[in-house]
Length: 170
Image (cartoon, rainbow, N blue to C red; front, side, top):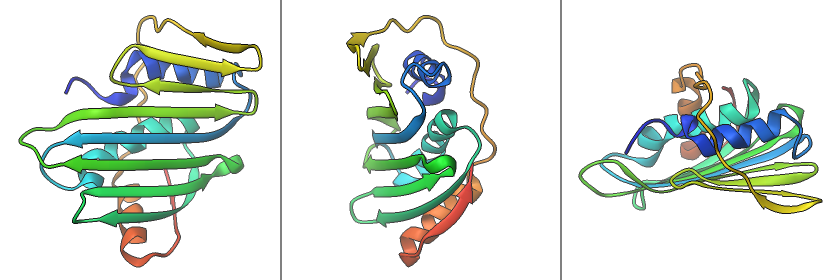
């Protein structure tokens, strides 16, 4: 595995589409991470997930509900961030010797279009009222430096254990 997901050129370009209003106002961010490696999905993939989601939404408060399954190595959460932005993530970890992503995709939906990014390959589709077009990535932008994700990961784990809604921020 090479480098953090939040600095991949495809995500950098997708975030530029959000910041410039190319897809309208941000409405939803959905992340899907599947990897091999030891440990559990939340502790191993959670920091990357929070970094990608925070890159899209910016610092925000989130009300979320989570579920984790120890026997399948998966964790899922769905939440609502400030300004009504829906956020979701599915994290799956398949047993293996070293961590390597098998799938890393994010869909960012705005009021006037959406962007689907495969973070593992150079593929970016921008869908707007004008149609679908492929956009070249260009060089990576500045790193998105999120705050420590420990508190958010604890809130997700607590929600998964209890079944209760949790309040957190990133």
